[in-house]
Image 1 (cartoon, one colour):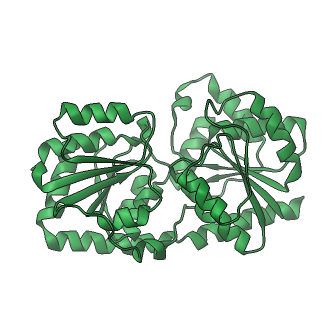
Image 2 (tube, one colour):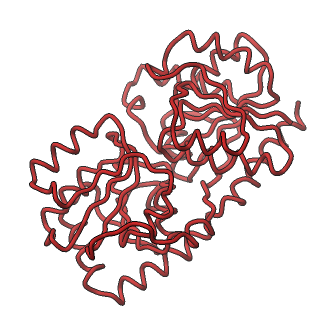
Image 3 (cartoon, rainbow, N blue to C red):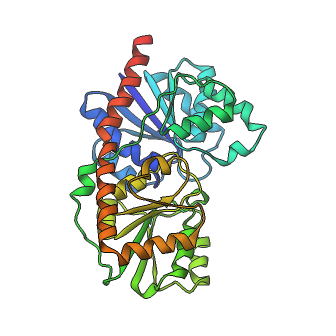
Length: 357
């Protein structure tokens, strides 16, 4: 079976990390799985796949991923594979359009409980048509599926729920490689875009004795200047470290003390599972997707509530027994999301579709 994974880029993100972790495992099991990028900009994730011998195709480098010429560039690839699996909106839409012009079996994964286009009433009709072109729409959490069905106001194609996974052993076995100068390190790993809301975490540092803490923001993106401006405005320049995009995330998490996900919305929250697997207490916004993963293991705080977030961080630092309790619960929860379970579930979807063909 020949499978093509199509994604906008291999910059930092949960969907991107899933591709990097799963494609080599598919190939180990004897499947031909290649990757196609709308934006082939060189990244750490891209290099990881290339180092493992994965074939990566590119439609372009930089610029908008909504280039209409990509539809025509995509069609020859749609015709070469038994199954084409898309991730992210531009890929979903362009592959759906391409499927009108050639015969192809399409699968997609819905990675978020929400996105901005769902606020545009006129876009719903286009989305309904787009999803109708897919044989299977995989959702990464119960809430992801629930919200998508509600938004479309109708039935989806076959829509299994498959939770994201990670290689838990990689995170548990990682070593502490980075110095923290004796301070308590609070870390968030996420792209610098509106959805991720690093702003709330930065604002939480207003309420902490900052000389005892250091904030590590790992990632990059369009909102970096906004976040740097906020740090300067609050006088936190000496206490916030912008790491940029890093490849050794397990080591960074292992070197941290507390992991935070302060997102506005999430379909699942893979970075939260990574933090738990590293044996760290994870604190996250009480929102659908994240709450499914974190509840009764890590700690949830109200959306956008910087003061409550600060209080939680302070307690974790000052109450060692509480810290050990939460960290222990987190690592146990992480092993429920092992990447091999995710791979098995995706392969079952592919096999069922292959039987129908």
